[in-house]
Length: 83
Image (cartoon, rainbow, N blue to C red; front, side):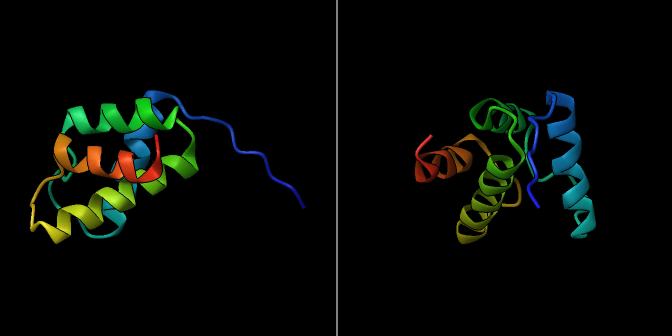
């Protein structure tokens, strides 16, 4: 079987990230609005890249004991992915 994923709309990117965070038990916004915008732009709205950027951002944020992911953290994730 082969599957072909399509890119998402910007609103779908935001909704997808927020949905996954709620499933994990998040009770407050973890990503700032500007970070969601950066993830959307840098991922070109492709689901696999969105997942990679959000996971890496969360890992970097946890390492730095951040309560909210900011532009500095997401920039580190973007650089690690080579985007």
